[in-house]
Amino acid sequence: MIALLTTANDIIDQLKDTSPDVLDLMRELKEPVSEYKRGVIEDLLKLEFQVALKGNVPAGMMVPLASTYARSTVKDITVVLVVRGDSIVIYFLCPTLTALYDLLELITSGFMHSVFAEMINTQAPSPRTVHVYVKDQDFSARLSVLSSAQGLLFVRQLLILKLKGIFNVTLKLS
Image 1 (tube, rainbow, N blue to C red):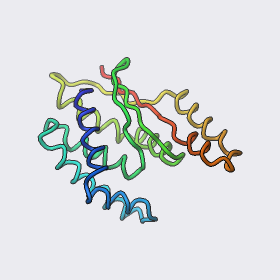
Image 2 (image 1 turned 60 degrees about the horizontal axis):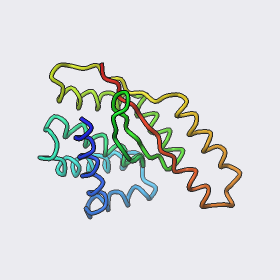
Image 3 (image 1 turned 135 degrees about the vertical axis):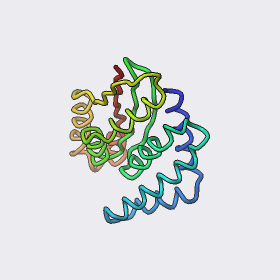
């Protein structure tokens, strides 16, 4: 599973760097756009990502992965690394406080759970229960770093460094 997620991540990262269509869609997200337009961009990114993943990941994982990466791209959240911990640990880069809260919303809304449960169960020989969670202390620690940067606006580089925190999400399988 980790190898498949890493492969998908590499493919999507390359697509974000080289595909003119994906680059144009990502450029549109930098401008103020309506929620409707964000949804349209997410759907178009999902289609682009599905095409890129086809033949590189199992068919059952293609749509959930494309959905996850499209939603994450629209929310300005980047998958940085996938590793084995107690289970599967996925590290996300959230460059802004808004992105950090959006990631938490993707988890608490059940979106991440449904996507990862679908992916894992298409690959598992028998159905697995999937738990997606963030440790409270991890989330609180990231927020404290962000809030401590408030008085440092005059030191722009330092503020940017403090805002670029890496955040991890763990998938527990049982």
